[in-house]
Length: 335
Ligand code: PBG
Image (cartoon, rainbow, N blue to C red; front, side, top):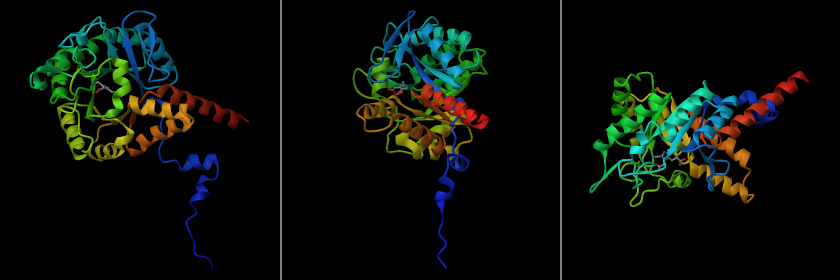
């Protein structure tokens, strides 16, 4: 008699069996597609480090959003690139700025898509920091009302979700109170609760022109060595009114996603950031990795770690693949 051993390969033999044994699934409705919005009309400025992505004027951003909605993508996340910057970042709350204009346009052209507006000052300040700069660094408390002002401008324009990415303390509470006072009690807050001071934001900063003129963001973004602190940040944001919490970047922080998932009851989002996207493209360009497979593998990894939502620059390609596969499966069934 032979010693019985586990035949794990039984469930890997055919695509149908593998599909039945699959533990984690990612649907297009869980995807959030970041878009960079600039001013003007008919403007499309490709971003060199991010193949397939461009800075889009509100009209083209709305067209892109409508395409994403048709593919079943759940939401777009808007980042603004203003014409002019100042030390306060006042273009962030300009009701005629690129983000409010894009929101209004997307609302018309893709009425069912959920619209997320990133809230931060770094794209709008001349110094490139995420808040008000003083001799002692980025001042937390004077930044809060400015973030609240920007949030109201985006909610007013029709955003469903406000997503503060600045990492100031107390901003979720300040934004929640301001939104409620302004009659936007239904507006959702997704907080970038655990946002790390990461090398992987490089291509984004090129795209948004938001590299700090001097210094770095380590005084407000999290230390990559910490995970318990991430849980504390998530809990604090939820206590202040965050409806969804985010971990960012994605792949280098899978343990953080897991830790947060196990400690909170709200949905958890993971952000596969620009550097993660560009890195995969660069390796694929050299023929070193297979891009479509790497795209699927990295996004499902975020879900397996515990993310309910995935913010990714691959949203369009992922959703398109999903549609193709569904069409292929239907054809197979029809014979
Ligand atoms: C703004 C912000 C950044 C990203 C999202 N919001 C850049 C930063 O903190 O420097 C990065 C996103 C990406 O790299 O894809 N604070």
